[in-house]
Length: 102
Image (cartoon, rainbow, N blue to C red; front, side, top):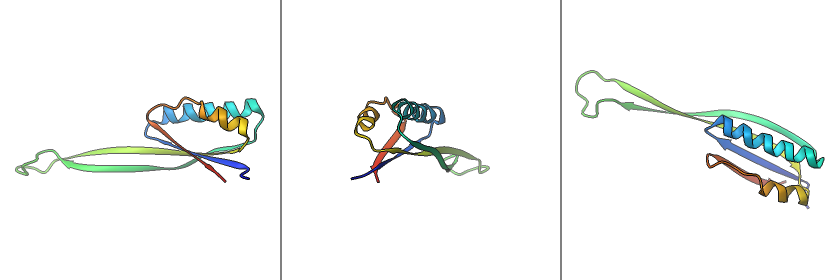
């Protein structure tokens, strides 16, 4: 039987991500479950250079669009009561969550 649950969260909006992480930590602390984390993982930075003039005449001017993806990992004890409460946590649309029993 699994004894821990590993929760992976990622988002391009750091404020929404921290809001969900704080909700999970507060919920686990209220129930008295041991919490490990949040462990911040390296931020993935994706950059796309796009030429401003599509026809290519004149000076080559580039725009750089970038998106940063922030990631966190939280390990909590896999108690049935806590897992049910975890499913009720409101997660914004721009935050992605993955739960794995280890």
